[in-house]
Length: 447
Image (cartoon, rainbow, N blue to C red):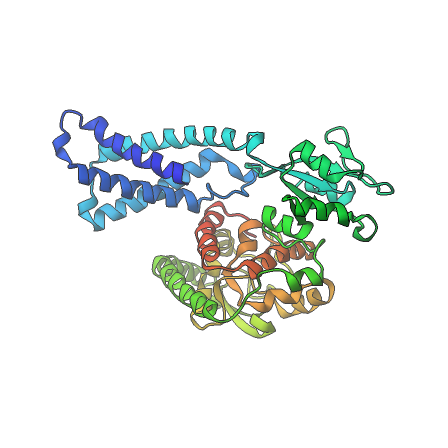
């Protein structure tokens, strides 16, 4: 982000210089610096909301040219608005066009060089995996789909009696003779314990020796938390939850989050009320005035308390005549207007008023229906813990995982929800808020 901010600043500066080499007195140095700063700030923030600085962006979602094009369009709209309301920042159209051209070239070159640079092996975290079973094999898979691969598995420690699942043709497997010597020989930075049976195979003395010698030793839950932004239910146990850092509630955090909710929801209402008005009129016209514009539904909120969530109606009035059910792809219950507003999450906007009434937060786990929740709490471990905070309009799970329409999807999303509850911070809320723009514009997971 810093590199591209500087590149965008230089792009605007070059745009001024290239067009006014013989007429440099048109703009003062102060004006050029100020216009370059505004241009770089707007363009960098626009790229940020399109997910171009998200480390976990997958190969499937990356699509640099498309994301860059959308971010530049958003930036140009914002810049035109700034120039209209603050004429002091106004610059010539030809200068802006030249700056955009230089910025586009710079981001393509910067990205190409950056990813070649950071993906060099010497810049990756070298991981030695303790174990060679099923859990160990999964570790080498979680890094493969990311654009930026943060770690490299340099080897596996196998134990006599342990069933080996790792591909020994692509990686090295070792016995448990002298783990510290193996770590030093492979120049590993970190040891990750990924044993299928900790009680039988855990090499406590060797791991303690490595730890005391200055090497990082990490358990599976913490490793997944850091690398994938989840609390892995497969590896989590009550003792880890009790003694780990995080899950702090109360105190100043309550007021901090409430202030953020009010400011964020207020800004969203200011920018989206025309869209909400258009959506309401469209729903009214489509139903010929015979159905409600808004839809109220009981959901489970903080500490398991029920409340009424407010949404635009996107389905037929008799959508649940056969009982409660998940929304499916190509769901026949969804109206024509409903399909559009669900695609761009416009149906969720009335929940702003749930935030104002303190029933929801701007960012948090999505609220579920009581009938689903009662079953999930019985069958899914730690599901109840997602209700430790207020539900949100958007959340970490919505940003990282597509629409969930099954119990398996619910399990996957719960891992992201628990990560959010554990690691809540104002910075994380702001980051999720910015990146939600990407989810809306890309229509990710809408159904």
